[in-house]
Length: 390
Ligand SMILES: *Cc1c(COP(=O)(O)O)cnc(C)c1O
Image 1 (cartoon, helix red, strand yellow):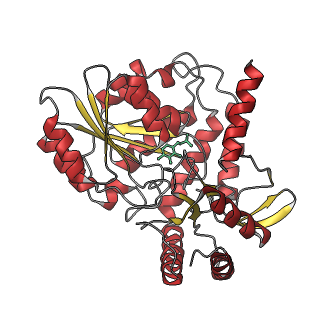
Image 2 (cartoon, rainbow, N blue to C red):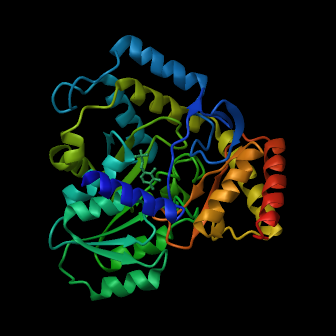
């Protein structure tokens, strides 16, 4: 009975060209990675600044392991709150210019815990249609009314706000950089609408921490909106090259989450070495602006080149560059042909993106060399022509 269900579902997924598989990477995460024994150029990692295998981050983790051991042993509310956790929270509050910070084990858990503890039945949550799955799951778990506005469309958002009961508790929530499209949410307009209609604002900085803003603090810095976003959530798993997530906000907000966020309360604290590694990553982001500059030089170069070749890169203006393919199977063929040429870019298909909008999701790194980029572009051009995409 169960077997039939599993088989039928998997066959159905395969028939649609949507079967997923996990590839084995050996060695560490960098601009080159080894997959199934083969070294390939990596163009699909969120390790934007090349920090995931940085020696200083490795050392910070080793030092913590020597001093604090590995496992945290319990929830942070019981006896699993170690010094590295506190140091990172203090650093993040200062870095983001917030009163206080709270760590979560992952970005997924942060979104689910923050949203579902703060909002519930009778409340309304206005969410961009392309927000990350973890935001959607947090909203569904909360039981609040889920209002999806058209992607980055402020008229759509305002029409929904106008129709909402004025006295209800309301939240507008958005990714700062959309993870599959690479465009940036119009945060100034969102904040203005939130004021006008008395809503809270929450932003997910997963892809903007270390990438956007003059000093890498993310989209709030990019738009000079310090002090105007109630809840700033982000992750250490992307540009910071580590793992885990944070929520920055007022002292009251953090105190509330410590008492109410179930994904914080009912889970073991992060291994302290992970917090120590994240802290080192943030310090490197602060002290080495050249990395961010190199990332943006690579980004601008590849964006321009792909556009002039005639690819549809949607509205990206970040290191996440989609190459629109539409057909799911064709996107897989594209990815496989690139792999044969020694380039790894994964195909992104529904349900991660809407039906008929399959794409290659190219991500750039600060550590890609000019040779890497030229090599990548020459093969993308060749295969794009073979597949009649350009
Ligand atoms: C990656 C991502 C998350 C999840 O973060 P993890 O730490 O990997 O669980 C949440 N939101 C956005 C926008 C993301 O891109």
